[in-house]
Length: 156
Image (cartoon, rainbow, N blue to C red; front, side):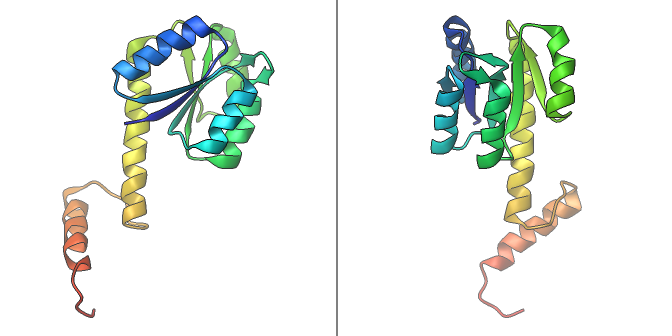
């Protein structure tokens, strides 16, 4: 399950998008301003942050700065109603940032959640086994063996 922060000042949009996120069985917290988003980021960790670019008290880039201070591993997706904005934002925010066009396409947001979950699983495996990363059958057998022998009190 992905923990999502949705930052947008359009109440109708956030209500509809939050409902979609919940129907896809993810947790969502809504913030309607830069200040509210900063408060949320200080209080909890999110796997995915959906950011509107223009907010009443600033921009999504200000939220991005705060996010990087607290959680550099969160996925970021800017939400915009303008296709031309995408290229400008990508040049400033970097290629790792995703984009969703308003109105939100359910298939695109589902695809974004799948990417976030796959990355989270890879990170969890890497964290659990340190620097060992891999999904091949040989690596899976190694992980199983490590799990089994790690419970033993025998000296190596």
